[in-house]
Image (cartoon, rainbow, N blue to C red; front, top):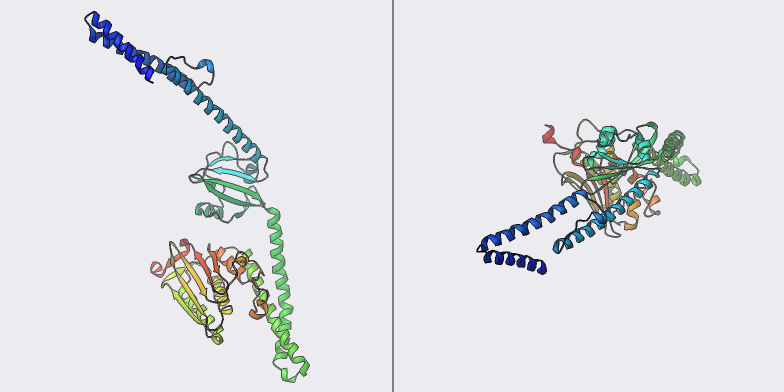
Length: 433
C-alpha cells in the first residue's frame, strides 16, 4: 500500500512540475489526477467484468500491476476456494440425497410455511407425492386428514402420529416431525402396518379374553358370595378357603374391569363432551371417595380448585383417571399423612396435581410406571389389591385429552403426580354463560 501511494504521489508530482515548467501547474495536477482516475476505472471495469463472468479459469483473471495485481490475485484465490467448497458441499448433498433415496422410510423436507421442498422415493410411494407437481405445495393440502392437520399445526412433536396411508387404507404409517433451522421441518414416514396389526391382534385378544372370562367369573363370584353369607353353616376347615377364594375372585373381577376399560380407551374413537366438565364438582366427588377410603388412616386430604375452571372432555374418563391418582396417594401414604389435591391455571393451560408425603418411589422406576402391570415394588400387590393397570389407564385418558403426565418422587419423601391440560380444552363458567 505504501509503495502504491508513493507511486501515485510521484505521478502527481511529476505532472505538477511539468505543468509548472510550462506555467500551468494547476492544469498539470488536474491532468495527473484525471489520468490516475482513468487508470483506476480501467482496472475496476476489468474487475467487474471478471466477477460477472464468475469464471474459475486462471487465464481469465485480469492482469494488473501493483496493488490491482495483488487484488486480482487474492480475489482469484478466494473465488477458487469458494468454488472448491461449493463443489464439496454439492457432493455431500448429492451423497445425502442418494443415501436417503435408498431408505425404505420416507424423508420429507418442509419449509417454515409447511411447503414441500424435497422428498425421497419412499415418501413418494408412501404418501403419493408427485415430483415436480407437488413441490412448493403445503403438506396439509396433500394430507388432509384432520388428525394429521391438528398434529402438524400444534407443533408438539414429542410423540409420533399413526395414520392410515393416503394411497392404501390397509397400510398404516407412523409420522415423526423434527423442527430445525428457522421453523423448517424434517418429516420421517415409516410403514408400521405389521406393528399396527400385531397391536390390534393383542388388543382384540385382551378384549375378547376379558369378555369371555367375565361370565364364568361372575358365576363363581356369585356362588362364593352365597357361601360367604352362610359361613356358619360350613364345616370349619372350609371357612378360610371360601374367604380367600372370594377375595381373589374380587381381585380378578377388578383386573378384568380394568382390562376392558384399557381396551376401550385404546380402540374407541376420541369423542369430547358437548358440554364442559365441572371440575370443581368432579374433584369434590373424588375428595369424598378418598376421605371414605382413608377414614381409618387419619389422613389429612385437602382440595384447592380454581372456581369456574372447566374442561372439555369425557367426564367418566376424567373421573377414572384423576380418581386413580388420588386413590393411589391414599393407599401409599401412611397413617396421619397429608395429601394435597390442586386444580388451577398454569400459563395458557391448566394443571391437576396430587401431592403426598408417603413412601415415595425410586426415580429409577418413574419412566416405566405407566406400563401395563409394572410395579415399583411387587410386594405391594397383595397389600393394595391393585391390578397394575391404574397408571396405564391414566396415561391413555390423558392422551385422549391432549394432556401429559409428569411424576416427581423420592423414596421416603412422597410423590407428586401432575397432569397438564392444554388451553384448547379449557373453558370457564363465565364464558359458557
